[in-house]
Image 1 (cartoon, helix red, strand yellow):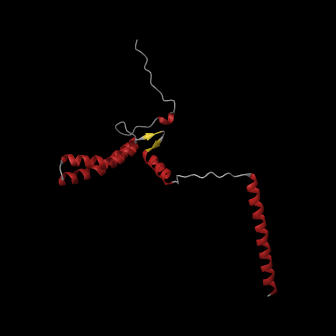
Image 2: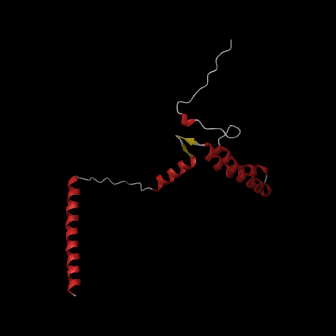
Image 3: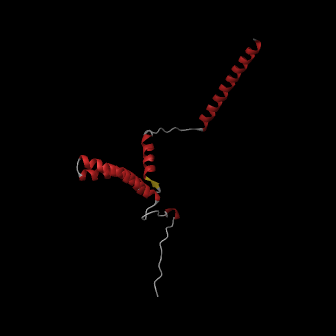
Length: 134
């Protein structure tokens, strides 16, 4: 008798990604393609100007951002989204000011708003009456 085979099933089914080519997802295949499309020209240009090792280094430097975008995923967030979040974080002001909002200050602002609204309505009515007289 043969032994039964068990397959590990992830608890979260969102982690299952359909493989597209060579065991890679569509996103990974596209990012590798973009990396190759950027890296090969950089390799040949640098190799003709300098030497082979410089060409390989230039290819790696130019292709790595695209490849990282396809591979890197942490806590369900891809690399470019992570970068976008980091840029937003560092653009925010660092110093946060705590403002205490009491119910009394809200009531005072509402009373002041009502008072100003009444003044504006009176001014509008008086202007309307003056226009009628002329």
